[in-house]
Length: 381
Image (tube, rainbow, N blue to C red):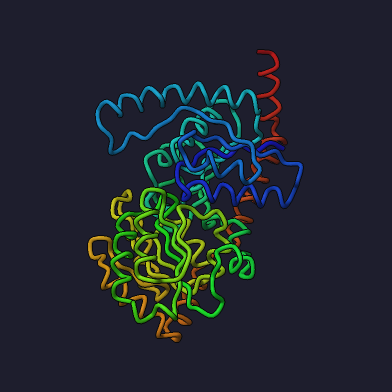
């Protein structure tokens, strides 16, 4: 069996795909996995580290760019269909799964046009334009939130949750202490703003340290900054005399979560799926420019359920951030309640549900001769 997973660009798109790949390989080691992405996306460096094959196509985003870049992106989008066809003819997958991002659209649509079973994952409550279009063609849509059902045909839409990598769910706290050089006796705050970091969070956090000097011997930090802010944030910690580890990117997210007593992050769907599956107390700072303000909508759901605190990006200041950190550090009862409420929302079984559907689609296609016919057509060509 050959499975192709298309998409990426950000961790929010890529990591659910990796979770699906992991669950598939756990069930059958002989399954061949191929990822399709772009050379400038996070998948280019993460997928090879995970031991999977990756093919690249030419694609760029159309939203929020200049006219010249938009024209270039349109040209590359057209070229991406040729790239997709070439990759599909070479790999000959039994199913193609779109996880979102630039590489997803052309690959999934090309697979559909070649009578290959297709499905997409939609992690957000409000789907992006690409998935709205693909939803009309693919065999199955797996969604995270009930709110998404209205955007897709009901007969082929399944509420599964966002797949989470097993290594995230089962991170070793002992390995985390060694890997990140953390002190076992200190309260640990894990800060990250997504796979590329978040300048507003980094800036506010550097200021927040000025309001927490009295906690320097009681609290430590693990902070993923992204590449651009790494030096500035590291200097802020050094100048303030705070303990912890500052790094541009963390590959071992399971260990990062395992060592964390409190998480401060954006509110992307994948991040929230991980937080709720693990029941981690969190302060959420939604990305303000997400399509349809879906991060704020997602974060507000957790806030209203008592599973997290929320600070809007427009209201984010060092002093208020420090206040919330201090309050949750001091109030173990509040953290315990937040943890219980968070776990009640978690769907750690999402990956297994998605893979059940994948296996069913491939079985149905094989029974009807769809994939066999495709391969026969290729041999004749």
